[in-house]
Amino acid sequence: MPDSLASSSNPAGDALLAPVFAAIREPGALPSVGNALSRLTHLLERDDEAVHHLSDAILDDLSLTQRLLHLANTLPFRTGPVPVTTVTRAVMLLGFNRVRAIAVSLVLLDGVVGAANVARVRDEFHQALLAGNLAAALLTGDEAEEACIAAMFRHIGRLLVAVHAPAALDAVRAGVVADEATDAAAARRALGVSFDDLTSAALTAWRVPDRIMAAVQPLPPRIEAARSAAERVRAAAQFADEAAAISRRLQGLEFEAAMKALRDRFEAALPVSREAVDQALRKAGSRVEEFEQATGIRLSEERPADATEEEDIAPEGAIAAPEVAPSMERDAVGRPANSRDLLLAGLADMTELMARGADLDDLFRVALETLFSGLGFGRAALVLRDPGTGAMRVRVGLGQPRPRFAFRADGMSDLFSAALARATDLHIADVASEKVRARLPEWFARDFASTRSFLLMPLTIGRRNVGFFYADRTCVDAIGLAPDELNVLRSLRGQVVLAMRGR
Image (cartoon, rainbow, N blue to C red; front, top):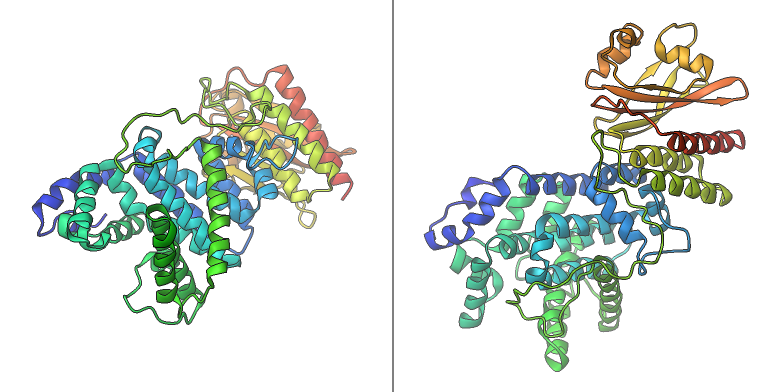
């Protein structure tokens, strides 16, 4: 966050906001939140394989993966009797845009708000969710998703204050009531900066795309006709933000009068009828209710602004089904406690997708994700033989840094080539052992210096090697695979081979 915001001509405001600045600068939670939000929002700029990049961004965060898969298997989101076992399938079933919006919401909820603060700031978060979903309902296509993210992001400054400096938020609320001022005016008077200033500074620090930065900026008092998609997104984000605030504060005739004034003010940039706004509000409210039910956020009937009591926020609405999200409980090498269940669920997922005639690339990703998440590897790749050159190349890679390599295996005597030629499954517990190191290919020794153990499982059709599964860890794995784990992986490999034969 720029230092210019950390000090102003208002020493009292600086003191109140000090915990916010400290939290953003402190290594750990908020910088990692910013990194996650930056990756998710930069997907707006990608036209190539955006679905795969979204899955990768989620899979790189174990907590986000776990939360998303749990949510995808709760009543509001479950699309059928088969549990959702992989992020790839969640995207396929729920849709790219919806999963991205859910992922952004979860990052804000878990990273910015935090479980310990939900009861205290749930009204603020509810308004952010309602604004985002309303903005999405007012537009269509890519504009709808940009507006959804921008409307939610407009609340980041306020959420940061609510979580880290509640006394500062109380001071602003007191100013609104005493002076009948707007939030922005009351914040500037009490703190020396507005919530919009804090939002802009946080998003700048988190390097979100310029198009989102522009969309969260407040509009001038006189709102003119939108001349581009970017201006429509900006107008929809602010309209939804203000409409969500009205919906939260007012009822009955006061609500109707305030909404009419809002529609009139935005008419040039966002010409929507009362009926269209009412319908969008109902749709947005339904989406927010689904998310809050699935994540266990329950608004109290009276929704007092200063509620501080701790409430049970355990997730509700889960369908009775095997737990399919990777467990946070890990062994010494990173293997989740429920690894066998995850592998079996992934195998069942592959069988069901093949019966539906799923795309081959989607099948590849589901199989690889099952291997990667089910056994808690640091990285994993599906490598296929290039039909033109005969070289082995990574087709799908997961983990950080993403595995990328290519090599010719024919006629070579290194460990990889020998395992592929003999179609032998290979697990190396410690690549540093002298015997192993002497037989590693040059490219592996050079580019995989941090790898300490790895798994290689060849893919063969008839007697022809067509590729292999690869997975590694940055630690020695003396235990390797249990017999039942290896059997499930071999069945998973068999499904991949069967799918390739049929295409």
